[in-house]
Image (cartoon, rainbow, N blue to C red; front, side, top):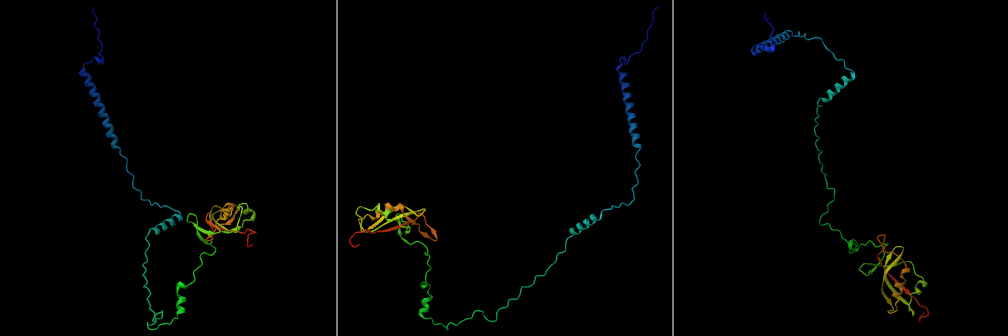
Length: 241
């Protein structure tokens, strides 16, 4: 005898249309439930609290109150004072002129001596060269040439070594440039008297031993300036000694 077996169909075995209908119904039910929840939340609104009519007073320290009062007073514009300018004092002219006037016909007699004394050209000129060295000419290159002033005159022993074999009395003259420590240098011969005695050559060769003060001008020593040195030679035993 044959037997008959029955079994339930699984969900995946259902027809496609049935699965779609069941899924759509489930989604629609879920959306309706969510809508009901939102409407229920909106129905319960909070009850507004009545506004308070109580008076609130802030208790500030006295220093703060004074500071606030001072700040308010400082903020207020200060009234400007309008001053009326004083009129200038009146100008009072003197009744009589302060400088006495003389008439043109009133002449003062002046003697010729007084006229000469009042002439500015006859006034004594100030001696501007007081204390300055005397200028006696021009140096080898056109510089001012001053008269030499000995700090110490040379001795006979310093000069005899440079005298010629047959010396004669006379003088020699040279121009030298002053150097520090009262020395001279770069000496050049200017002349002899009598001519031909070579005394200027003697003076030039012995000049490295000389002690000559530098010339002065305006109270200042002119080291490096040119000076004229003259030296007189006296030879004993010559006629006329």
